[in-house]
Length: 447
Image (cartoon, rainbow, N blue to C red; front, top):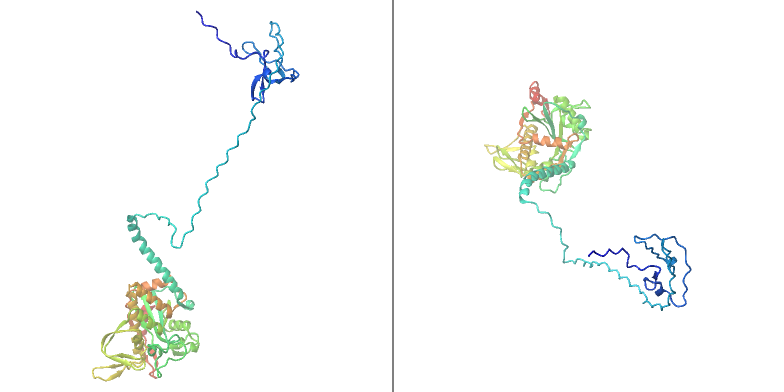
């Protein structure tokens, strides 16, 4: 028994000629024409449309308003179909009104709750800092700490150096040479001294020993720093020389006296011309600075061969041997013009060398102070020293901070050899002159 032949596609779709289907907008679906037309409704006039293509089974389909109520055209070789019977009028079902569904209301975005303002007693949470490993700190700190100390020290030194008063003598200073010659001048000015201070006697003197008017050089020394050894040369202020610029024969300290038209530049040129040595650096210190500097280093120790005193300056050393002096006592010692010792016979003996003896004491004083400063490694002591030096020291305008650091390094552990300048008194027994050829031999290492 053979299987029935397969049904052709679209076999269930009725022929358009029987009862065409159309789209009913009221029911929103395709319905037969008989269900769309209501009683008294006339069929729309036919509209001629092009021939619809035939399907696989030979059928033709017509969809649209122009084909409603018309019979399909006859197939080739088949009799035409009979016209369809008139459609019965049926009542049109009332479709429920289509009510559009309301669109869903948009969901509002969540609004963050306002944060409460921080109260005075509460603190905002702090950001967590990244944790640094302890091993890294132990490695980095020993490297960074010395660098920070060096940088901090340089910044402090630069700040202090900028406060030092500068003297315009760079045009008369020399460069090069076998070493560095520093002209050190102890100025006799007391412009900043307080007459009511405890050490006023050592600074200002008494009624019979007042300093002369104007700025005068009470001490003139040349410090030589070189490979052949450090040396300190003292120049007596009563040495008769030819004054630079004027050609006048007079005391060397007169070239520094501002009342006579002198000053640092003329003093430098006078020393160079009469002694034949170069001057590379200039340093000026007043007696008030001496007092502060001595106190900053904690005092200095001077060895006295005999008990000594000077009623004019207030010096009073009761016992022989090493004695520690503060700033006031050191000033009384270095400025003493009537230095008197109590020797073995128990009687007072005033120093017969007068100014030469005072120069020697000043030289011992300067060497002791500078040596103690150079040997100090206490940072607090050095800070005090820097503060005191910046108050009363005056440096040449050619010296830079780096040059000052080099100079301080060269003076570290300073113990210069004292070199007396060969001099002899003149007929007036008040002034001095150079003794040749001895002076030339002494001055040779300074050239």
